[in-house]
Length: 299
Image 1 (spheres, rainbow, N blue to C red):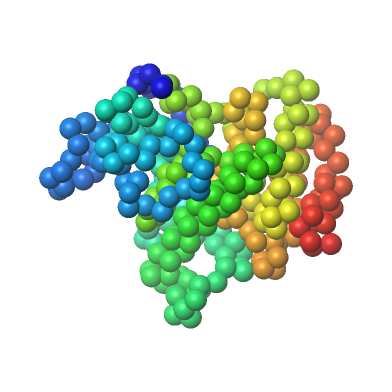
Image 2 (image 1 turned 180 degrees about the vertical axis):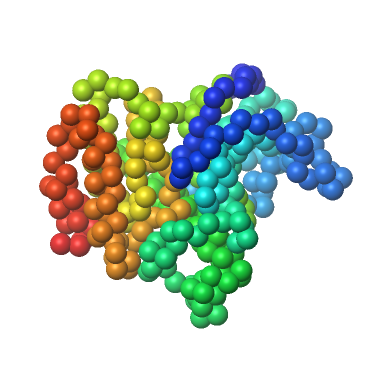
């Protein structure tokens, strides 16, 4: 059991160019609810949410008596804001640290990347598809829902693949409720400090080459699953305890149904390979792209 202790530390997260905000935790979000817990901001929302894949890690708090405390905003981005949340069981002192990614509604989100990423995604009703295509208010809400659901689905699938293969790591997706996605916080649970992004890592040559091997393994798992990250870079990849962790996956691409699938796959490779190449790693970028296209069934 982890000690229930927290001190504020510097925390950063991924996503687009954004400003790190360090704020105090807000007041309870459910003040109108007469059944608030004695401590924390709200009761756990686990019971009413779409829940992560099984077998679940033993740190996932599923108890009805757990409470959520928001510790402040970690990051603001173009599509979503990320908050640090502690889910705590007062009866035992057990807790987990979660990153709450809250997608913005249609009036506030910037749909700067939707067109290419949404190709190949379809909804059943033609009215909904037209609304999404025309970017009506209703359509933007539909797209926001697709982003959060797509990320939850991608994390669930890739977490299972990582559990089976050991070759790819993503945060465990704890739950999805509406457009709020709660995922495993990757970092120091005692201090609340996130693991560094790959772009922040200062490593020797041997470690860099090992990290590149891990990246190629992860990309290979994605290719065999016939998907591409879609926005992979050293800024949305974390390094935790020597392991690469892929994050920020709402725009995951089905490389078969998306007509630009091969281009997205190749762009992911080039984005991360350029960073490693600039640090003296022989990435053999073209060979890696050719191999991944073959593994994805695109050659």
